[in-house]
Image (tube, rainbow, N blue to C red):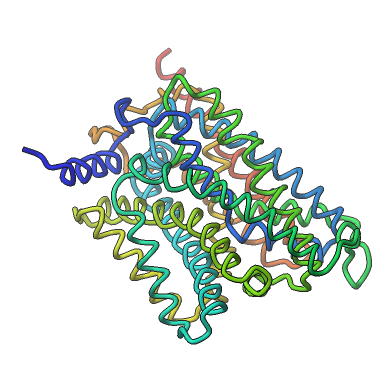
Length: 447
């Protein structure tokens, strides 16, 4: 007889190895509550404030608005495809790049999610120490990691929707209270709407703000791994609302406007500075607010880091360990990184990995647009068929060509803002050409 724990472990293993079956899909409300945990990262509050101070409030708002539209449109396609196929990023990458390329994509996804988990955990630790100064920072790190890893044991359907459903109103109320208390303490001024860099207005500042948000296109991968839990009958709802423009209006625009106002009024633009200011302003409520925001996003970070680490090492080294073991390993890695204080190096790694991610999105989006039903080679490449290849030359050439173009531009200070857009365009164009050429060769052989 299978126990509930064994059944959950078996289900997790099945989801790592193959497409999500219909019986394991989630209802629209449950998946919405699970996914909307991603919207409350302190990062979204702080990055908007930083961009406003660097390029001006108007440019930041224009860049954010364009990002909302871009993210909403691309992720609507991603969500529909993931729902139709039930595939994860790891499995879909096997279709795009073959087994080797899929392993690399999974490694990049795992590392990026882990890095973001480290950053958000450090925010929680800073808030804890700000309220309890006697707590050593290393101990605060440990408490945050243990707390975060315990939350990701098990399956997404059994806890994440319920947890984030409870925490969502606390986040929204907390954000409103933070703004209200800031006004009560410091008064209100329209100055935050007219911020300009000290060197003067930047004509193309909106472009720099827009392309900065392209560095967070890892959310396209997040979308894919969450949307696969959606039911077929809910496809339009998820594409238009849950993973679409309304989500990013809250995630980027609402959080961004609040962040610009708070940072401008409180006089800080660093993530730790904003957190400390909120704890000083709100007291215990500030600590609760910070932990709620970071708990919501970190459940996603650690969950996706764990599932992709699990998939990577199981495929590469044939290591078949229980899912909870991988969760513990993710927590241990995060703690070691935090103790090593290598945050500056992580930022550099994220910048380079971001180029790989943008190139992945370019290839993925073209494939989805040309094969929206997800039938092309799908079953053969995801069911352990002997027709599965170690390499898909067309996909790999497109991915690496786009990445190379982006890395070259990123090393040129004057052209760095074009790095992500060029990466996307090159990878998408090369993949479209290789697909059409392959289709032409197949037709010729049949004739």
